[in-house]
Length: 295
Image 1 (cartoon, rainbow, N blue to C red):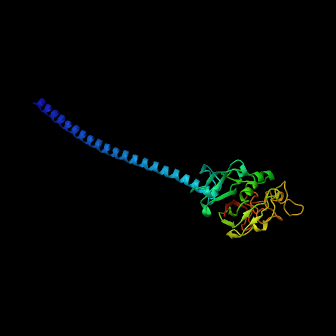
Image 2: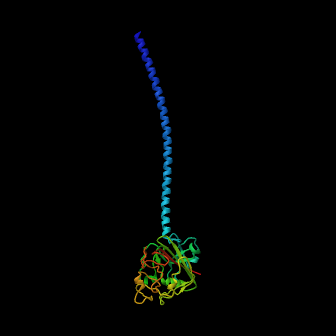
Image 3: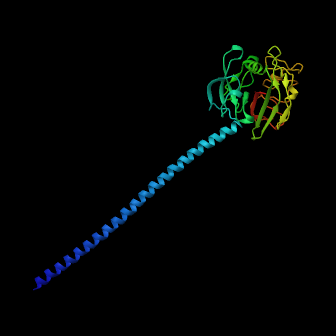
């Protein structure tokens, strides 16, 4: 009898344990389902976050490019001199470039000579302008001799001087106008515009023979140099007795006695007289550009 009772108790205990195990299994399965659901949700959330992070990284990368572009635009005010446009077509003037974008074009040779690259400003001041001088970062030394200024130097996609002989040949026929653009190291932009511009021959030392009426915001500080011959360190044509203005001020220009403006001086944020100068500024200029267009 006692054995029967003991067996019965063991049976009930087994049954209870079995129920407990089944209940635990059900709870375990439920927890596993909950965990799987939460894991799936977390995976989906992580995937979503990863996509957002990738999007933010792309946005940041684009912002970096935009910052670089803006920085470049600050260095090249208004019509930036970059080689983003380089046309294979040969033109006779920038007014026939027929492009919505400023850039480098091939100019037909003068008097049967070889063609050469020019930068055409086609967006500012109604377009059609041929740039013959450009300064913006000091990468090119402008303290050069007569032959360098006669023939030109630098790169038309950056800092350069086109060459006195080319400027003379281009402007000797018809009426040409001139724009001088200026920007100091504090981002103050000004310009001077002249209704006429032309040079004399090499025998005449490329004198600033034509200079028309002034308009603009920079002040008229080129009129002082009208009629003056061009002077370099090795070819003194100024009217300063005993001194060579190009040597004194480390540049080259249509010096008189010696200058009121001097855009081929040293690229420096300085009030020193050797810096690039136009009197209506407190110190040296960061950016200068001289460009001409046939009227």
